[in-house]
Amino acid sequence: MMSTQSIPGLEKDLREVIVGGTSPTWMAYTDIKFYTNAFIFHEKKILLGYKKRGFGLHKYNGFGGKIEPGETSLEAAARELEEEAGIRSSLKHIGVLFFISEGENSAFHIDIYRGDGFEGTVTESEEMRPEWFSATATNSTDPYAAPAIPYDRLWETDPYWFPLLLSKTPFQGRADFRMDTVEGKLVPCKWWFGVKDGGISDSAY
Image 1 (tube, one colour):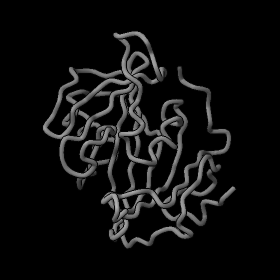
Image 2 (cartoon, helix red, strand yellow):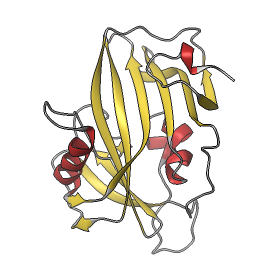
Image 3 (tube, helix red, strand yellow):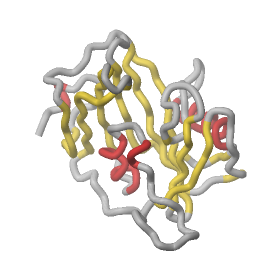
Image 4 (cartoon, helix red, strand yellow):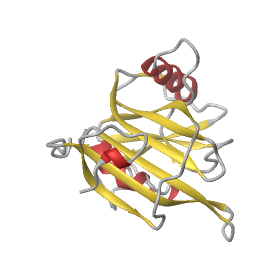
């Protein structure tokens, strides 16, 4: 088990769940930018947003953004959720994703929130198109069932921590990305995800 003392950006005393990559060392950074990302669950479904512009274009993600001066992380998460999806939810902190991209001096600390249930009407915004996906099924034959989570259209390291989000297991992780000059996109070169000892729970569903 790798000690988190050697993983900048993460707390200590985390138990390794998954680790990978080809890079022997973690990338250096000079400062940290703080963001949020909220995922809403309702009736065994998860609400994801299709990114219509900006960073992460054409990927599916939760709803969130930068923490503004004077805001707490939770306040920023609630504001971004309402701005991007038109809804409110009782959000609970579930995880931390720390990542850095090649060529950037700043690392990103993203507080991950989970909300079970919501108020308001799910509404498309200029930045995000909300869509419901099944939080349980993978290949349902029911034509009215929500489609499976599109793991191939999430960020490349999201599938490593999504099972923890789905099972309500608090987690922390780091991912470093390098630019693939052949494909012309960022690809993960080193990642680590862990939980507190005894932190993995049974599936919430």
